[in-house]
Length: 414
Ligand code: SAH
Image (tube, rainbow, N blue to C red):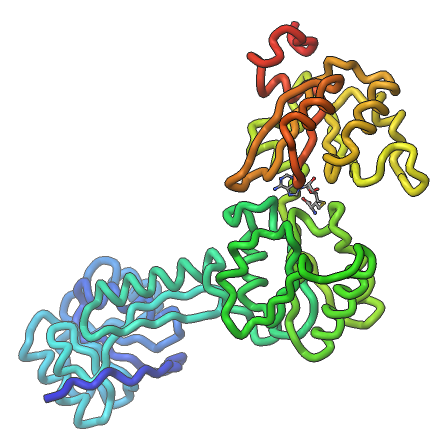
């Protein structure tokens, strides 16, 4: 005879009588789950394990210390036949059948009218898995699903969270391993993804085919026009009821123009939330082995944009003040203007021997670190043909991380 699969149903047993016949290890395993859903549990068995006896003693269940009687099922909604006597289980099963009560059997699943799934719970979701009588298989599927819910690999948004809007997501420095759990979840829930060139691109391959992907790197026209177009697109899609992820490299609010997008959303009355990312300013040096601070060496680190050269009328950076800093200076977007910046720092009094590291394509397959000094970095970047994206780290922490290279000029060592 064909064995049909079971029909799953969520029984709501609170306050309803459930009879567990038998007081051994099966009962001991099932009873806590029944208590947890509020069932009125009655264990019928001449003997029970100490654990079951404890539950009865604590008033959490009723224990009838005797053999099963058919009348035990009179008020019951559900029954678990778990005695160690097959004949008794058969009798319970028959009594249940006669009363149209579903009955689980610990000894003979094919004859049972109900099966117990492998159950797990996470954040208001109940996971119940039934396979065709392969309990270990059910348990591993259950474990995988619950683990996925826990670590965010499986997205389980609350229905109320499905509202349209924009999420500004920082994607970290480039290695797809370095995005946050929240970033992955936002991507998996997105209808539209607007992605930057520096966002971790591998993750975009994982998007489902119905997600609209807008690649900002391919937008024509100049920088600010492109930004206006991005603001327009995210607002327009969100207003059309879509969940929009604005996916950027690093952190959205570190030279990422993220707050311009937040303002555009606010002005348009579109809900906007933020998922912070690991900024390249700290993580790229870290992965290249350079700490931005170190006890006794650098008690400050300053992150500066190098996209405008010193002296540029629109520059907001006080380069003479930066030059006077003792601590670490981290430059972003600085490859092109590095000669002018190095000159400004030297002119402002920073030592020509100051160690400098230039880390290009940090955390990505093409990662490369060039070690130099403030006086020599200009020529080194030129001869090594360093290309953006690159992070420039200036300060003694570079020497701490590379003592052999800077042994001669170790001002930080005593
Ligand atoms: N919001 C980003 C920075 C955007 S500005 C963040 O928080 O990281 C772009 C600059 O970031 C690049 O010019 C470069 O200086 C730096 N950058 C970003 N990713 C990088 C990477 N993987 N390796 C080296 N530099 C990187």
